[in-house]
Amino acid sequence: MKGHERDTISTDNAPLKSPVVLSVALHLLIVVFALAGWSWTNPVQEPEPRSISARLISPEPKPSPVVDDQDQRRKDQERRELEEKQRQQAEAERKREQEAEARRQAEEKVKEQARQQEQERKRQEAQARELAEKQAREKEAARKKAEAEAKERERQKAEQERQRQEVAKRKAAEEKRRQEEQRRKEEAERQRKEEEARREAERKRQEAERRLREQQLDALADQALKAQEAEARERREAEAARAREAQMLSESEKYQALIRERLSQAWYPPSSATENMTARLQITLLPTGELASVTLVGSSGNTAFDNSALGAVRSLNRYPVPDSRDTFERYFRQFTIEFNPQRLR
Image (tube, rainbow, N blue to C red; front, top):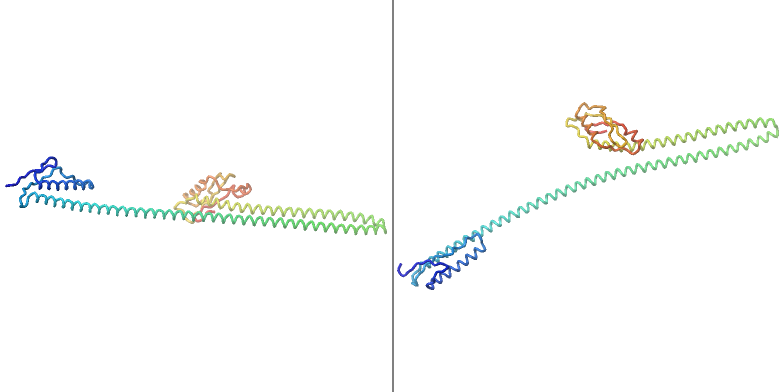
């Protein structure tokens, strides 16, 4: 073209031939630095090329192709900036969506933790209620036991008081009888002296009769006293035996209930069991509470049912038995128990 020259300007060693070229180069450097700074903030953007092509124009007043090329580059730059801004906006929107999803997941996690904490709280409350009910049952059992023991002490105290009164009454009767006997003796002695004055022979006869009568009365009194003492002793022994029997019965009922409870916990009847099935087992224990033997004395008619009852009896390593040897020998050395799906007795 006339009056124009076209050349490629390198950023390393291109010569600056005119103010227009200097201006173009300056703008290009500004764009390069701007793109370089933008690339530092956004590592995804590719770096600008190191060489830039520019069109040199003459200082003629007509429009220069270099200026058109610069406008095109500026538009391209603006387009790239717009695209980058749109990309950044899309990236920001994506981050906001990720943050919203993270918040939603965090909220779900918090809700799940709250649900688990509520379940744990309910479980702990249920355990606390169960413990409180167990403690209440134990407290009620202790109270009933204390009441029974107090009643037994009152009964024994009343029995001792009755016996004391009987002894006092008997002593008073003996004292009255002694005084009466003394009065009779004195009266007899007076009559004897009066008779002695009248008739010596009659006095001897009467003296002999009196002595015989006194001996008979003494013998009868001694027999009556021994009979009363024997009767009182028998009553005391009978009362003591009844007290021991009541105590043994109460203690045996307590340990029988414990044994039924242990066997009920250890017994797993088969699925074929019915309400009409009952197996009677004879259990023999040692004083230590260990099982000596178990015998099926009454079959339910179902072998699985019978075996489940036998297995429950044999599964207990040690049975609760009383410390009293008499109670053990009477109620727990050998006893029978019935297994039924509705009861255990």
